[in-house]
Length: 588
Image (cartoon, rainbow, N blue to C red; front, top):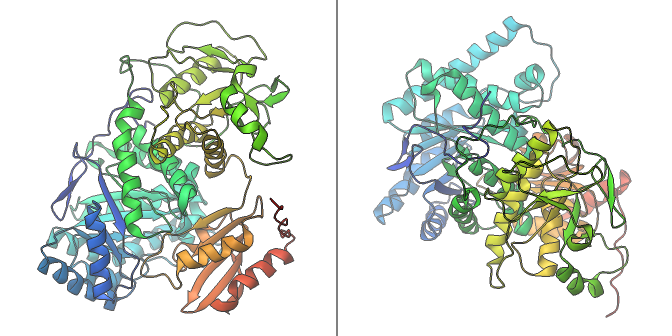
């Protein structure tokens, strides 16, 4: 299966163009940036105000949740109020669980998003063995529920996003395919087949997950499966990482998943999901879109380069290497991915690193002295026991260059560990730190999620302390190291049952010292249990003012008053032996 034309040469995937309220998505049209409202859909004035704020920062499509038929009906009032102000930004309705809400929303919006995991199927985490006949009977039942929406969208000439979420696969899919990227893809393909039966093709697809590795694998598999179905299955793709969180962590995680796929030529519209006010998402979207040309540029033509890769782009596995030691530090083998800095950076940092600190340089580039190789040239097998990297003189971009290096090393049987660079030149002193953050995460995160890399070296961020923190944050976001508490936090929407930003800050203030603990903070149940599958604990809105607490994806405490819920979460962490008292602050 092929997910792109050439993994070493950027070429945007050919996709048909789908019109969304006058905005073409796909084809060779510019990549569209979008976001979602966080206000109550029944509050027309608030929805209008948030939409205007998004439009002001360049949002091109605005999505609004419609959890009930009444909410869906109010989309008319929101639309009319915007049109009365001369604002014609396309509106999309976000639907979960309620086919009747979808049918109502289709009257008023330019696009309807449906989640095939919960549109007609139930999710109760039940284990059941399906015969093929039983499975196909369930598929027919799903088709009966979904077909009327297809017909309505076709009659109105509006678009539809078939948006699979890793956290909300139906019990039927989970029991038949497992909690896998293949299950995510098949869930969407079932709905696509129904749409095509009715000759409806204004479709856009998404495969979102909070884990960038899962998200990347699912999107690649989707694109490959669409290509196998035939040339006319070339539907556009919406990219996003769900529950990315806030601040640097949310931006880094989003840049890893979205940036990796954009580099592969996949993606026609994107949304960065942050636990912040929605307008903050758009600049990050624009940074990703604006930088893809630079990050994918090769100084030499690699369009005809044919190298048999050894990585599996549809299933993560870290590249096999031998463990070596350089300057007293272990690299490769079973060692964790190391963080390397320059000698100049080390001289700035040495006096500021406390003994036993989790965030500290683990190697100095000049002392380690990796073998610098241009993988576009013929080279002999490196000496065993030597760390290798790509020469700064290489004419390929870093993602292509390190993919080529890894493939060529594997083909010659060389198991040398690889040191990754985010750039082949040092950043100028005035480099924009936000652009550096996004670019470094996209480059290094993409390679790490490919299974390539045993050490990383940040060069785009000129600040010594900032580059060190960025390196560790990239490894944490990619799921390769855990040096601090990990949070999975959804971005909020009209379904949210508490103030996500306030509650997230409250939980972080109590738990940010719990190294290696993963906590999910979900505003409602839509993506909660599934998306929390690899979280240790979950804090989920169950009803207005009431919180349910989870261990993994199992609810263990119900209907806790919100005023008590953070304390009860801490108690739950204690009960399961994951709590540590915070260290007292040192006197300055």
